[in-house]
Image 1 (tube, one colour):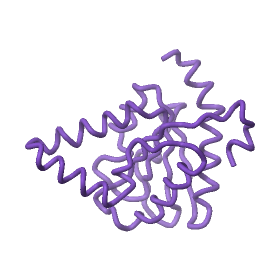
Image 2 (cartoon, one colour):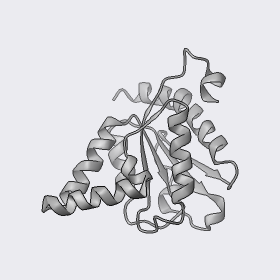
Image 3 (cartoon, rainbow, N blue to C red):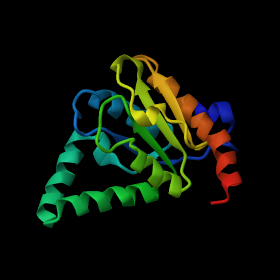
Length: 172
């Protein structure tokens, strides 16, 4: 566990923006929910719960429809969740027109936020963002069916050690 490995003095709960493809949302849904629950169990907060939960995603879409300006409502909702977060995790195992894209990573980079890109090795898909190497605050991690929680823990250790040092050096 991250807290045990780093020691209580170096562990701090994080607010995490969790992003994923919504276009093919049912395929990885269960696994992503488990990842998010694991993050919350070890003390972190997910600021984008609607991305993780199918039910909350549907509720947000209904609210956006009622607002009269669907795209703006969704955009503002996600910008708010990004600004509340201190870390972004993008699950990039599926094609997506938005999540884990250059635009997403640019937004979190401007916010001086570490980015974890997670990819299921079995997916056979490589997002262009996953292949890119464009910022010391972006790190890529691949997982297998059974080891995604362990890979998440490794990614969080990176955030709490190396990424913190990079953020300080960038003086944002």
